[in-house]
Image 1 (cartoon, rainbow, N blue to C red):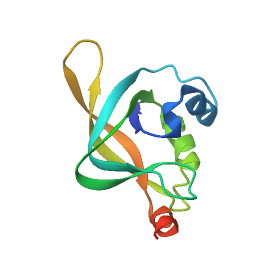
Image 2 (tube, helix red, strand yellow):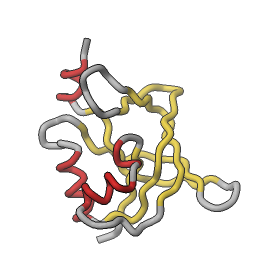
Image 3 (cartoon, rainbow, N blue to C red):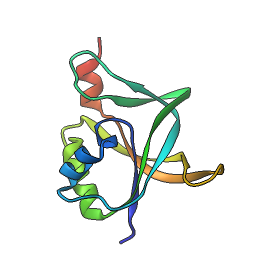
Image 4 (spheres, rainbow, N blue to C red):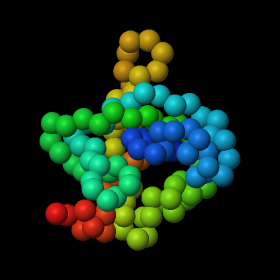
Length: 122
């Protein structure tokens, strides 16, 4: 199965956190990246940031390259997909590698799920 990429904007930006979640050192590339059409939110008592669709907004983050299917399963548990805290979505990100040219790449990211939205609603 093909490797997958992940746009991270919160705790998984830290390579130590990512390695701990995956259970092994991640050996793939990491590129500076930006996601258009979303806003990063830090809400009250919830300890982690999340993103929601917002026209005209942009979120800075990191594109984590070449994750294996097993890695994605570990990330699903960490992001509490089954509990509805986050949900995984395929997005297009703008990334910067070597040089001035940007790369448009498809990657997964985790956006606010229904339980997270309900728990942070004012």
